[in-house]
Length: 143
Image 1 (tube, rainbow, N blue to C red):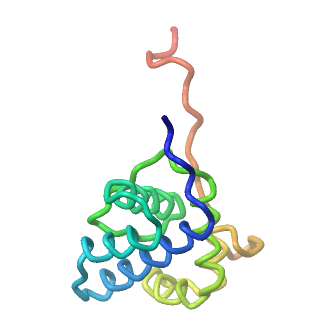
Image 2 (spheres, rainbow, N blue to C red):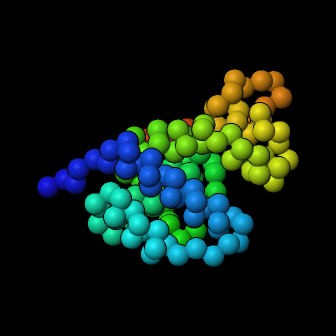
């Protein structure tokens, strides 16, 4: 039996919790993952493992956005699309989140948003190079 999908309310709760921990980690402030997990179990009725895995899913979303993620939560793919929406909702409501990242990367806040698709890309925006397309086979081309 598949687990029930997380509601928007549950996603908003866990995303806010994730960013609280990430903010502490980036500032070298100690935090207790187990305490955060227990609090979320109380608020959502989800199991310890479910909360843990959802935190890993958020790390995967952050990795996909090119943002830092909590080192204690290795990115785990196969997450519901609503989780991406929840992370973007949180980020859009807190434009100040971009400022520290932009300063570390030497970008203006507008350019930082452009790299994530939040602003229209201008001529001075950083470029994104994806690389060559993958081949159909895993063997060298014929001579």
